[in-house]
Length: 112
Length: 116
Image (tube, rainbow over all chains, first blue to last red; front, side, top):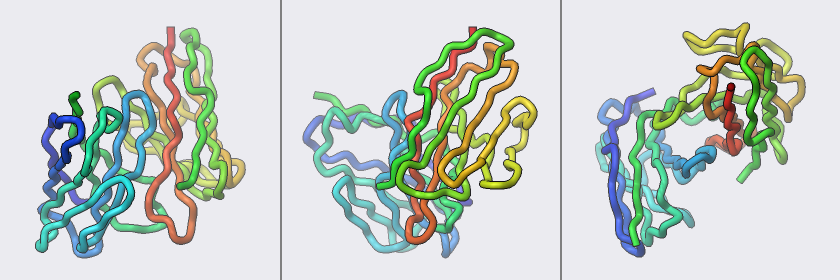
């Protein structure tokens, strides 16, 4: 699976949009971009994933560049409960989906 | 989304004893589940793949005789930390995914193990 690069930490004001970048310049054509987050002392939570089109769900939006070498996770209106470590993972979508290789992620601190 | 439940959420044990952690898929069947370990301020590290009805597959550097994995049914995988030592103190997390239509993983809430 392709390696990803994320900034180690980011701050965001409550109520504002949080934009979390991820570089995955070695991504292969059949690899998807997945985002998970981990709130302190909990198991990771799935957020969203995409292949090449932008995706949106009730939690977030995922913007993938046309060359697919980077992406941005957008939390449109960050709340204090969004404070967590956010992991960007690229992998082939398959039935073996629980096997994930986690990088260091981005620690997002949402401030009042 | 699908629900994965771990038990216990927190356990303290004495050095030299064994501890069993259960991971259950509550609303789906999982032929494969995964076990991770997370030390403080570090990311999750995959330990092993638990296969229903067959032997687990361990990642490099993980002792299979120390971390016993049993996946006896399609909804239950267990991790037993044998002869635990303080350096085994960690946050253990399992995950699984329903077959057919789901490509995301669902994680348990984790088990905080403290060996004293």
